[in-house]
Length: 159
Image (cartoon, rainbow, N blue to C red; front, side, top):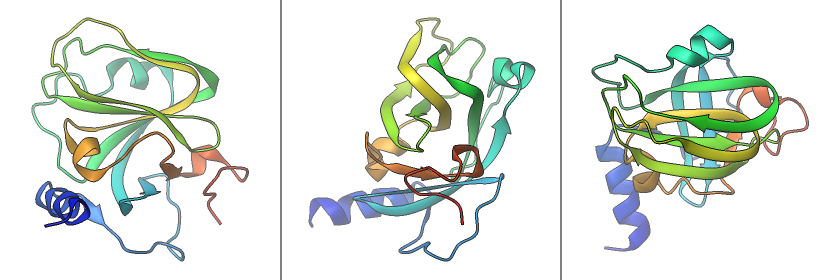
């Protein structure tokens, strides 16, 4: 079995929504589309776009459905740093620049860990999904993300 087929099998087994093409799919505040060497995927998301929502994030959740996540959106690019205080499930953190391009992926953040997870400067959004899913899917720096938060100048803009 090739590496691509293994990754696709793992991706499907983890329950994410794999879409071979999304050229005509509409954008929505309630979903994030990703595309890269692995193909394309869509996650239903809750959006945390104000300070109280961003502070609470996914704290106290005992589970997260596999094809869902939380998208943290900031008013302007900044140096994003997260921790796992009161977070009960392992998470992957996908840091995204203003052009909707993944700049960094933190794999398997440890529940309850207070160590800061630095996403670096220039972050406009952070997508949190189930721990291990980003690696299984092949989400890496350079992956393009589509969501209305990234605007018309994004690498993969909403139309």
